[in-house]
Structures are given as C-alpha cells and as structure tokens.
Amino acid sequence: MAYTPDRPPLPESPEELRARIPGWGADLDPADRPAVPKEVYDPHPYGAVWDFPERQPEHWPRERSIEHAFLTPVFGTSCPPRGVSGAIRKFAYRRYSEGRAAHWLLLVGADRVDTLGSTLRSFATRHPDNPITETGILAEFKHHGIRSRRGQKRADLVHQPLDLVIVSWPWIAAGVLGFRTVRRLSRRVKR
Amino acid sequence: MRAMVYRGPYRVRVEEKEAPRIEHPNDAIVRVTRAAICGSDLHLYHGMMPDTRVGMTFGHEFVGVVDQVGPSVRTLRPGDRVMVPFNIFCGTCYFCARGLYANCHNVNPNATAVGGIYGYSHTCGGYDGGQAEYVRVPFADVGPSVIPEWMDDDTAVLLTDAVATGYFGAQLGDITEGDVVVVFGAGPVGLTAAASAWLMGAGRVIVIDHLEYRLAKARSFAHAETYNFSEHADVVVLLKKLTDHRGADVAIDAVGAEADGNLLQHVTSAKLKLQGGSPIALNWAIDSVRKGGTVSVMGAYGPIFSAVKFGDAMNKGLTLRMNQCPVKRQWPRLFEHIRNGYLKPTELITHRVPLEHIAEGYHLFSAKLDGCIKPLIVPTAA
Ligand SMILES: [Zn+2]
Ligand SMILES: [Zn+2]
Image (spheres, rainbow over the protein chains, first blue to last red):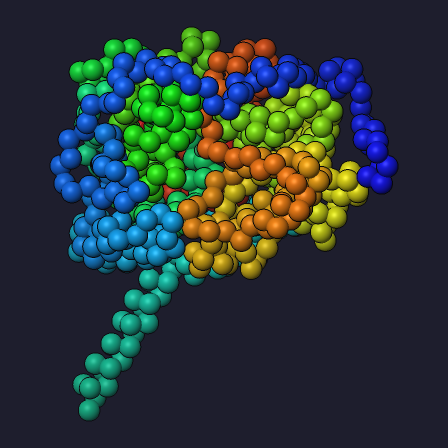
C-alpha cells in the first residue's frame, strides 16, 4: 500500500484488540501521557525546599568535567583516583572537554591500567583476584551452559570466544612471562 | 557491609566494604532488600563505559528500608520502605524544574551530558550502587518514594528502571491509534515497551530478538508478533515485507550499546572501544521505520561516538526521540496500570541470586543462560 495513499489495513480492529489485550487504549490520548508535554516549568515538584542545594564537603580534589563552572553541590565519593590510572584520569578531566574523543579514550585507557594494576596489587593481599570465582564461570555448570546455547540460533555465540580472551589475557600474559623467565633462568643454570 | 565490587572487565566479586555515610545533609542511607542486574549494567561489566573504576559497586535498581537520614531530610524516616529511581536528581535546577530528572545538572561533576546514576561509573557521577547491603541515597526528599502498601518489593524494584524505561520508550514513540510499532530487543525494557505500546493504542506490535525464550515472553507478556532476526537474512527487508513495503510507524530501540548481530560492529565497539556502542539495533530501527516515522531510543549508549546511519534518518524525515527515563515522572500512571492488571512486572523475573553469588549472576545474565530475562539480587540481611 505504500504505493497508494492509503494506510495498510490492520490485522485487528480496535474492538478486537480491546477484547484481546488488557488495557488496550488506556493511554490513547497523547496529551494525557506522563511525559507530555516534554518540558513544563514547575520548580520544587517533589519535596525540594532549596533553589540551590547545600554543598557537600569536598574531602579530596574531586575531578570534574571542564564543562562545569564548579564542582556540583552533590557528587559521588566512590573510588578516588589513585596511582597511574588516577593520574591519567585527572589529566583527562583537566585537559579535555566531553566533546573530545581524547577525553573518553584516555579514561578507557585508565580503566585498563587500573584493572591491570589492581589485579597485580591483589596478589600481594590476602584476597587475590581469582579468575574462576570472579568471572562466575561456574554458572555454566549450574545453569545449563550447553543447553542454553545448543540449537538456539543465537547471534551472540560468534563473539563469546572473544570474551574469553578479554577475561583471561592478563593471566595468559602472566603465564607466558613466567614460563619465559623460568626457561631463561634454567638455561642460565645449565650453562 | 557486604557489597558487589568491580574488579575489571567480566570480573566482579563480593567483599567487605566500608558502609556508606551521610555526606550531605539531604542524604539517606538505605538498607537494600532487593536489587536487580540491568542490561545496562552489562556495559559496565564488559568494560565499555569510560571511567568505570576497580572497587566500584554497581546497581541502579534497588529498593530497601531507610536506615538513617541526614539533618535536612523532612519527608523520610528510618524504617520507611522506599523505592529509589535510578536517576539521582536535585529537584530544582533548570532541568529538574522542567521535569528532566534524568538530566539534573547538580549531581554529576564528571560530565554535563548525563545526570547522576547509582553505581554507573564515574561518567555518571561516581556514586556507589545498590548491589550491596547499604547504599547512600542523595536528595532523599526528592528521589525516593515510600512503596505503596499493596506493592511488593519485587514489583517496586522493577519500577526503579526497567518497567518505567520501557513505558517511557513507548511514550517517546509518540504512538497514535493504529500505529504499527516495532520493538528491537526483548529484554525487560523492550518487553515493557511492547506491552505499553498497546496501552497507547498501537494497532500492531512486532518484537525482534535473537533469543527464542525472550520472543516467547514477548508473545505471552506483551501479546506481540515476534521474529528471530538470526532466522532471516535481512531484518530490514523482513520488516518492510511485513508492513506492505512501507515500514513501521514507530521503531523502538530497546537494545543499546550491546547489540549483537554484526560481528564487525561488536568488535569495534564492545571489544576495541572505538565506538560508544554497537548501534546495529538503532540502525535497523532507522532503516525499518517508515518515512516520516519516529524512532525512540532508550537503549543505553556510551559517550564515545557511534557509527549511526544519520543520512538515512535525515533523508527519511524521521523524528528521533531519546533520553534516559525520568523515572519518578512515570510512577503515578504505572501504579494505576499495575493495579488494573494491565502490566504485570513480576512476570519478567526469572532468577533470584543471593548477593554472595553475584559473580555467577552476572555471568548467567551476560551469557543469557537458563532463559534469563531479569535476575534479582537478594542481600544476605534481606
Ligand atoms: Zn537499569
Ligand atoms: Zn536537578
């Protein structure tokens, strides 16, 4: 029907739909939907009694986007920047606006540095990182890993092996490095 | 307290962590009784969201009991059973004053493009989330609502994001009576969007996914017509054929950055971080909607640019509407729909995972094992 002015006929009439689907048409009037109109000026709609909130104390130099005039009155305090990843993060915030790809790529880079550093640091603690328990891979046995995939025509099966590489590369790298070191040392001993 | 903690891509664990404190006079501390893992948590879990720091606790979907309140809190008292929208918002800035609670300017120093979200990386403000025994809730007078007596925690936790966002996705589609609506993605958000499209008067609702069990749920929960894109060479052609070669009136992207179905897109976005997400579902939406139609986007995308087919959107005269859901604005209407039995959120729940086993919960959800649609997290003390 796209080639004529008519709208294609619907498989069911409104009456049939109303009979089949609970609540069909309950929000039929677009003007009566919760998000319409899109923007209405209505300050203090939910219990706020301030025009500008009190300010949360800043206990360390809190990183912020240079697109903000100042530190927002309320902010999260999870994971202050530290070490090399923290330095990269602070630089990304200090130097680049959110409009710059460099800002985000530096932050993603800092995340990888943070992961590697934290994993290595964990080996010096009583709670070292454990690739078995932390990946939750044991769920494969408890929740039908094979049956959930076999014969399901799932589109995500193609890249799941890639995920394995992402998870295990620090351990593989550490293993290869360890093997090489041991081999080099043993050769030296033989000589 | 016990809390889920991020250790790096695909790795999380539960550890002893310092309990949150009141940091601002309008904070509350909430003891979590139910949390959920969200599809968008997988973007963090897979290491796709910039500035996701090791040691962070995820979880923007949670309900609980008020444990302490700051000195300026007037509307909540310890002991109140509360549901907390995933957005953190001040209630009075330029954006909040216009109902854009997801876009509050006063809660996220790390970015101006996105508001504050619990447990959603430092890009969203660096707040710890609710996959823990306790969580700090800023602006306690503004965000949380006391859970109505008739509502159980399971329903309430689904309303803190998934169900509110799904309903919002249908709203963004500006659906009018008789519209043909296609929904990409049959996760909790897509399923709710499909069910909500009927409430707004859709004449036909089509759901596209690649997981058979989710499509089955789309038929039972959302009364939708369903297609598995992995059985069809070209989903766009399929949708054109289904709609008299015209296209759908409204297309809803309820997938976001984790889209499957194109390995190249997946590798450049999820794996190499060269895109803020694999926009394959969004591009299908743009290609399969009719000219002059509306594309609604509430699948989550990251801040890095994505290869979106903007030329097609322009040439077709599309309206693209999108946002994070302003959750609290939807609640009064959603409460009515649930009481009337038009929406049954708890039908989406497939798994309950103790907080201590959350690593397996993430793997189960991420790898889509065992027919998983929505896993809830139950803290030990709950
Ligand atoms: Zn969510
Ligand atoms: Zn605000």
